[in-house]
Image 1 (cartoon, rainbow, N blue to C red):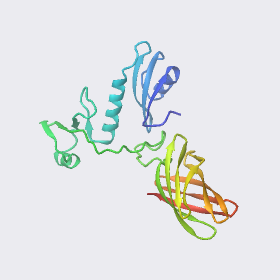
Image 2 (cartoon, rainbow, N blue to C red; image 1 turned 45 degrees about the vertical axis):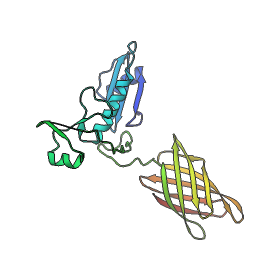
Image 3 (cartoon, rainbow, N blue to C red; image 1 turned 30 degrees about the horizontal axis):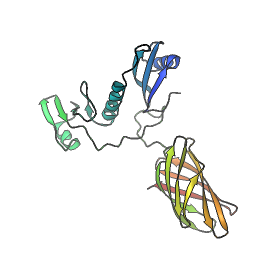
Image 4 (cartoon, rainbow, N blue to C red; image 1 turned 90 degrees about the horizontal axis):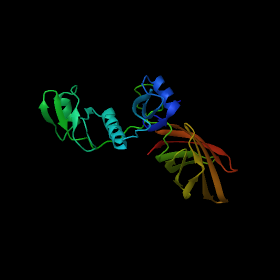
Length: 239
């Protein structure tokens, strides 16, 4: 299975050759290749013979251009660098261009219009390799951020806030509620499964809450064990 979509991967030798064959790209076995992946797998490749070495500035320049032109109706001219003007696609009408680029644009020819590089961009999260082509749903495995949760305990319902920071296949952060704030421990990410624990101060002493959550975009839900005092459920939304 190819690596995660939307990430530039450097791959040498036989694996690069096999991936290139699957993606209908022509890469020799003696080449070193940097592969750009999208939802369907291998999308583009930068290749060179091993003895020649790479031009990393060019690889990064092209990667910047691919991110920009994937999500904006623009193209980048030859030798374009980050921050320079871009070309509005010919398929965009002047009326649509005025809405998309409120800072204005310059018409050089009927088919050639340039505008400042869009700045207010938040790149969409990449969908997983092999997902439905054209889908742009938020990655279901992204726990990063702030969450507003409602816990159903054996006694009542309680509102808590979860502030999570991802680090590879794990996450940490703070759990805040009626008993104060506690650090998240043992937070892991396994697909859409996100278990974690917090230790809170309870009337009978410290209590470990063990959560077993399941992510679905901006929603999370699951079960929680309240130490030796029973179990309950929780559900919430990204804040």
